[in-house]
Length: 74
Image (cartoon, rainbow, N blue to C red; front, top):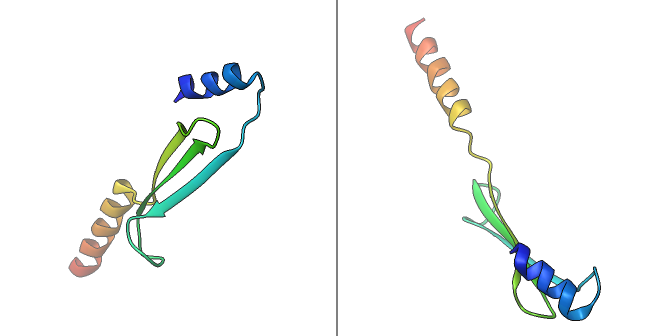
């Protein structure tokens, strides 16, 4: 992806370019834990950046399970 950004800068002799940004979530609504966003160059059609996002935290999940188990024992 870094090469694609350098290619845009060198080909068009400028530091700025027009981009298209699109993103999606795994599920519709506000229940999805995973999603991704892509940034594409309009000039070349190449991917300049890709980001995968997650709002899932395994540590928080384990902590919630421990608290639930403690409440059951008390």
